[in-house]
Amino acid sequence: RYRDSDPEENAQAAVIERRIESETKAEKHIQKLLLLGAGESGKSTIFKQIKLLFQTGFDEAELRSYTPVIFANVYQTIKVLHDGAKELAQNDLNSAKYVISDESKDIGEKLSEIGSRLDYPHLTKDLAKEIETLWEDAAIQVAD
Image 1 (cartoon, rainbow, N blue to C red):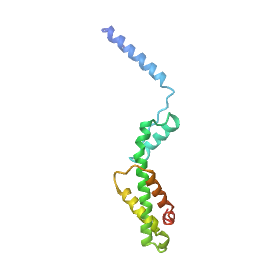
Image 2: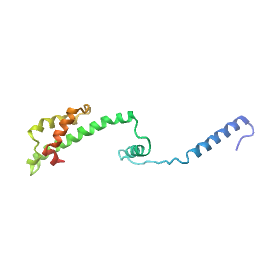
Image 3: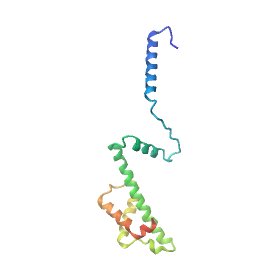
Image 4: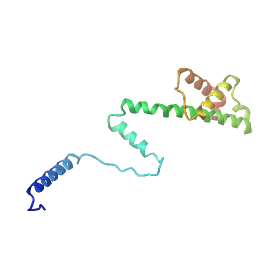
């Protein structure tokens, strides 16, 4: 196993082997998981859930990095509901129930425009109130 010609090299090899053995023993309790799957199949989501459930959770920087994603989801979802109700109001046989009220019409157009952007504004209390107003509209509730 060791070369007789170089005692220094043999000593280094022995040190490396001892280190590998000690690291192997130290990692015996660690369970490893290999996640395979196509792109966008949920591998990262599973990893994040494992981290949240079995580790310390997310640090402050990770939490802040999710804020734009949450804003995007809110704006895109309210846009889908608004636009879906408008389409149903034009094409459905029972179209009257999908007509957005006059009070919510301007809010709906504004939020739909925001939902079409690639950059979303910070979700302020005023915008949240407008989203709530549109959400409570009967046409949006039926379209949901």
